Length: 167
Image (tube, rainbow, N blue to C red):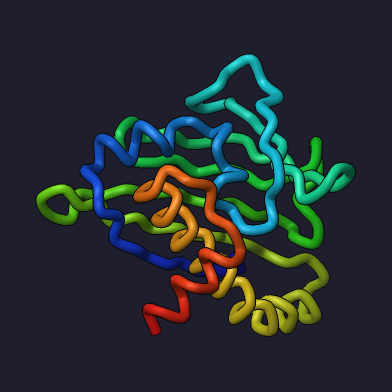
């Protein structure tokens, strides 16, 4: 059974402005910790079917393809490598969701849905991975907030400083 881990942050900008940035799927390396480059690999640059490689280094990448698009609100991407799921998952997807929160503010929800293979061993690994995966999803949400509010790519140092200041 798939597991879902989510994190929410409040972004100090109107939803329409946040959506303008979110819809550009080529910007992920500016706010996803550990990603150094984003490359669009499909004819579509947005909407269902748009696909990107997110690079961890010069040789290691993951493919992400939009499978659901809600104009002005967010999208769902499938994590994979070619025709196969992203290792080590049986399946994995990531949802970016925006909602109005108040005057000039947007609630951003980041959610990772994943399922491990290997039966009972996979179930045990899902439980074991839940806490580190939750921390990673929270980091994506926080880094996106920082990038959107400052316009500057979020560095590991900036993310660490923000977390320390907001404990």
